Length: 175
Image (cartoon, rainbow, N blue to C red; front, side, top):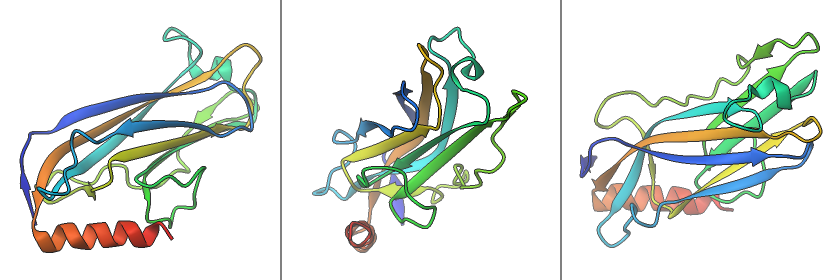
């Protein structure tokens, strides 16, 4: 299906959520990695999320209020906000919850953020941008929730049929 052009590398982007109940956005530019003419795509192997507080020295629980939740999603199409898990544009998602007692929990987000270790395992992206949406129900005054998204990926060359199928699926998901 795909011929590897590179070894695995990591793309990172930080999303800073400074207001509660407001969706915040960021993007990862893939224009240097995706080439339609060469049928070159980005193969996502896994996505990791690191939650931090206002500064790199702060823990995220300082910024999050009691009974708080933070949701973050990575998509290959711009949906303008958070989406349901059955949306084809969804590449990965994460959720972090803080209870009234201050306990942190991330077990309710079950989306597969690790696509496996095989050569053909992964999510192929042919769009030139990945979109990140995040929302925290409450952010303590004067603080921010910072989420670093680490996308482990490689560049692959697809056959004509495979590239066309992925492009059609991506276009169909846009509707």
